[in-house]
Amino acid sequence: MTFCGKSRSGASGLTILVLISILSHSTLAGATEKCLIIAMPEVRMTGDGIEPYRDAMQKAGVCVKPIRMPLARVGQAVSHGEIDGALAELEGFQQRVDRPIIRGNVRVGLVDGMLVVRSGKISRISDLTDESVGVWLGSDWSDVLLADHPKVVRVPRGPEMMQKMLRYGRLDAMLLDSYSLSVTGGTPDGFQAIPVTSLSVYSWLAVDHADLLPAFDEGTSLFLKMIIEWRLK
Picture 1 (cartoon, rainbow, N blue to C red):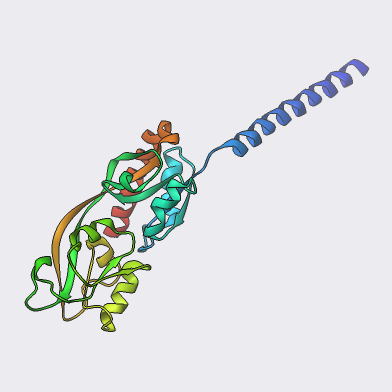
Picture 2 (picture 1 turned 180 degrees about the horizontal axis):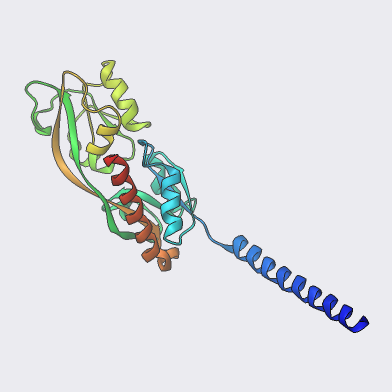
């Protein structure tokens, strides 16, 4: 009887040790798991938020901490190591960053650059004369297209603020991508939206995490699928 009692006691002790070992390894793994800090656009709509993006990446096996960030800050934040990548930046983003980064293989979108002006005589950028044209601060493609225009207003809060400034008469026109235009109310009454260029958008990742790129691409694809499904509801 005494022997049996000791055997049961020994088995229980062994079980506890195994459980402690498993918990310790799990805790250590959780503590050492790298969560990538990924910048997301300020412009948003229901269905393309932080939680769906985090869930999509988790399904792909990548831990991310998405944060909303002004467009003008993204390049600087990547350069300084404050973030590990970006969900949506234009082709050529690497030229604005002082840190090695790699482009994802999944195109997030193909959008038009739109010139929004009052309905009338203007049908292209070259028709602009002395109009005050709002652009999203940090939007390099807008600066290139308006390089010779004398009245460019760089707006820190981007499309949402530009829409308000346009309606209140503080801007005569604005230049932005078609996605941002659509999710901030569309073309205001009395104005027209004119396509002036095409823009390819990709996700970007610091080269330090290049080994995660296949899973990162998979997460991006899952996220885009979630957005499409939400829009079809």
